[in-house]
Amino acid sequence: MELILKELKDSLTNYFNEYLTDSRDSSLTIEFIDEDKLVVKDYTYNQVMMFSWRNLISRELKEWYKDNKEKLDEGYDLWDGIFSDYLVTQDNPKVDYYESFGFFHKGYAEFILEYDTLHLFMGTDFFKIGNVECDIGMPSDMFVLINMQMVDDEHFYHESWDSIFTVKLTNVTKANFKKYLDQALFLIGQCNPPYFKDDYPYLRNYADKVYEEDSDTEMINFDFVEAEYLEAINFYNSGGRKGEVLYFYKVIEYFFIINRKQEILDLISNFNDIDKVIKGLTNIYKDDEESCLGYVLSNNDIKEKAQTIIDEAYTENLITENSIKQFAKQIYLYRNSVVHGKLDKRFPLRTEDILDNREDIWFNIIKRLAYICIEVFCYNDTLKNHRKDL
Image 1 (cartoon, rainbow, N blue to C red):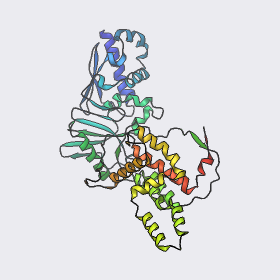
Image 2 (cartoon, rainbow, N blue to C red):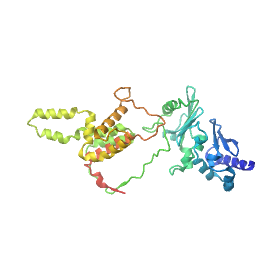
Image 3 (cartoon, one colour):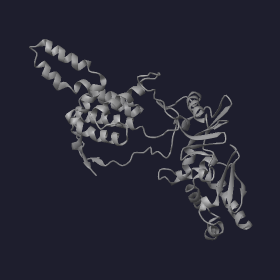
Image 4 (cartoon, one colour):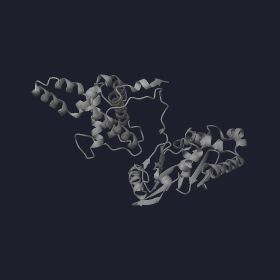
């Protein structure tokens, strides 16, 4: 067994030094190895993790060695596969682990940082917040080791580690590390001012796809009519460029009055009764925003398209009843939670958990509704004639 353990240690040490972080010397050392477990330390950040052979290879060690000893000399693919299938919390339950994102363990937190400016220029890579140290740079070797499943993604390669930044916090606690991450992101932007317009540091979870899934339709006709209401298209483009939901909401809002054009035309045709015209126009213009939103969703050309989204919202428990009225109410409440930045008993103050990278469902709902409005009002519902189902 002693010989087997020596061969395993040599193979792993070679893997750490020559392959795991091929652009720099590894800071990982094997602190202990026996027939039950492996203990690895990242001495740069003083992080120690235990890996049981039972969870690493799911077999008795001697049997596994017999089948794989020929692969140990050039064991890069072998160890890649083993660590990519391993979940660190199996043997280290005190680690707060967020797959393909980051972890907290014994006073140390490390998470993937996305900030395009850093790929061009980094002015400051270290600062302190009180007693907490903040380090910005390539992922630590321990981070790479416990996130090897990222290499399995078809859009991520082993060399991709060198293009990733992480933010590392030392001297934090489980209770406060998220608060310090919030402060660190703000200060990273101050210490390294953005080079690109609208660039801003944020934490990114690589488990969340940033590339679009294949569409279920394709364009087949490329001769489009000229659009009406170009301001609405400008709002939609601004929302797409800046990623701000209020621009998509402004698209819908833009059509609050236009949507009631026929009512206005009917009133004006009654021009002989000027008092009735004034009263009717006044009623249209004084309708509250939530009601106007409901009128847009009830438009005959929009209603059927919107119903699919309403059904999804009901299935996701975003609304308590499957109705346009309830749907409009929740959209309006969401809009207000984004707009209002002070505590207000009428509207909930909307803040986000810094580690919550889940898709904002309401954002996508409002974006889809904005697209439907453009399709109906700006293009007179002709865009569907340019597509076919795949």
